[in-house]
Length: 413
Image 1 (cartoon, rainbow, N blue to C red):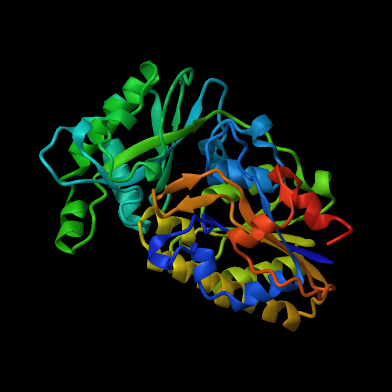
Image 2 (cartoon, rainbow, N blue to C red; image 1 turned 90 degrees about the horizontal axis):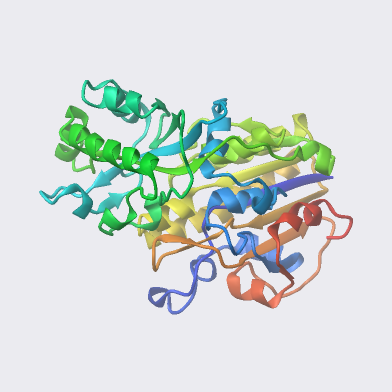
């Protein structure tokens, strides 16, 4: 028996007037997934504990069986683990996003974030900007005085580490939950560490705003990466060992460091796929092929994470979210079933769900329950269900996402 976990990041949503009162999952054409739902089990699950922030960090920890109430110290340490960054005692990790602030003469605190990802800036441009910033003669001594260093990544998602960090009472907000809002009320606050980070963010905007790369991006009609946003603070974390807990070995396929970090910390193999971007246009088929290869060579379990629905929602792109959901059906699930058949894998279970809701209405995360689908290739019932929020609410309700792996690996599908 082979076991597959497929996560469509942020694909669950609330009804949308522009879709005739349907959610994107209800509106999108997903015949393959709906056929599996008809033949499987559909229910709803709370992946986000009620007293914790809604995000992929808490949601995916929960799905993998690591109770966020026990293990969550912040998002950044999970992402740092993906790059092999270890945190010394007294140090903290942060996500350091490249972001776009609006081009206005307003004071820094009155500006708005237009994009939490600088329109998905990638590769050498993002690395060049963050390295230029941290080597700038104005910024470098300020960062050194604050004990802050950066670990560049070929995307908008850089990592920062701070020695001697005091996280008591600190408040750092995720930029994707506050798009279009004046940043004053959401800038770092709560203690002296926050004040230092806020000063560094303002200085970074001054330096990056007129960088040649950003001048070229504006001339090309692209959003500039004219600032950084520091958030997702946390200290070192240890997670339960997945093979020891569930008796299964395997891998995690994703384009985002968070998933690879969680996988690495839990004893699973992080698997990168060429052309996987974390955006709408990504290598869906490559992820499927890597998943089947992992099942044939690296144990009986594999997780595939697709970021596209979440990023499209944060960008206010409803058409993109619908397209991502439909490609999860046609380019992921349909192709997966074909590849499993070609590989001679006939007995398998698939758990398919969102890690959390991401709402088109707010462009931010929501911690309400999400629908899940459990399919067993050996069963062929006719439930009449589809995979959507409404049908999930009509099925069984799981109050804790930490039971999902037990459900996937259990004797009864």
